Image 1 (tube, rainbow, N blue to C red):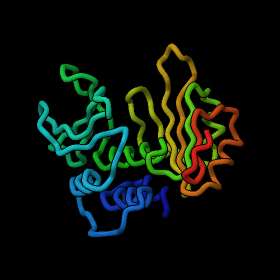
Image 2 (cartoon, rainbow, N blue to C red):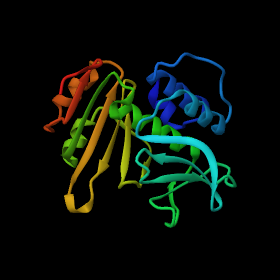
Image 3 (cartoon, one colour):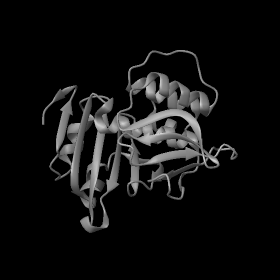
Length: 211
């Protein structure tokens, strides 16, 4: 599957195809709207780090997603053509702009969940990694989509065989960050590991936990 074309301009059908591929879901009826794509994801994909739910009114927005521990929630504006997405940490907090469009946000979730090892047969994760090592480790991948602002800046990357994300740690950690890579096949990931000096906290190769 051409991941890059799917992520440069995500659509309802392309993000569902992307999720079908990573979670090994069979093909089926096509979706024609972002709302239908979200309904399909809710019904078919067992996300672990995020919980999608049927949209519910929250202020002037529709709340539809939360971090799995409930520390952050997201909502979209149904009055904007692209369904602009906003996020907040607490019910009494102000909503802050997260992503320009709902289909982009859903694509970000698919990339995040696949990269963190929830779907990819081959994956690696490291915390407390320096930014220069991230750039070296992900040199074969292209930055895609917009970045998240939560918990701090989270960037997304892809090639046609792998997906990844990196997240800055709080300012007190300096230039350290978290990085996670998921690959379709065992071949790309060892080369990623070889290019970096990072100590991987966890490593799975073709479904077998190595660390």
